[in-house]
Amino acid sequence: MRMLQAFRARFLDVLASIYIYNEHRGYTSLDRVLEAVRARCPGEAGFIAAVERHRADERKHYVMFRRWFELRGHMPLKVDRTCGHIDHFIERVFDCSI
Ligand SMILES: [Fe+2]
Image (cartoon, rainbow, N blue to C red; front, side, top):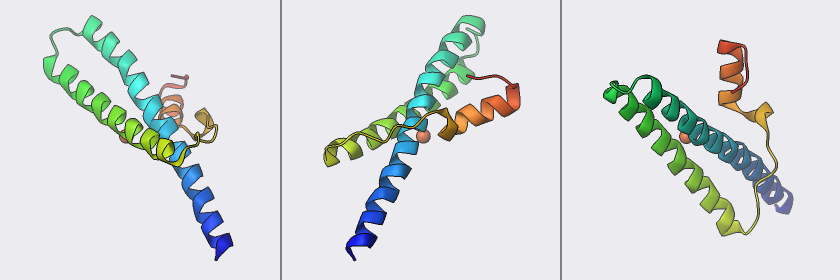
């Protein structure tokens, strides 16, 4: 039973670490998208609002996972772009990094 609990805890640590990386990567990347869209397409209010809503969702998710770690009193595992969904998407679609 103890081994099952340890496995569960480790699984959740890995999963939440990947999520918090992706949520952080998401909202900080959308900050850069917003800056570019506001500069290049200032008249596209609907599009800007949609990106702002998406950014707010990503930030909300990031805070949720951050709180999960804070309540447990430990930091996430170190995760990099190899586990980044948006990193892989941008690389495949645009053949470059974010
Ligand atoms: Fe999200």
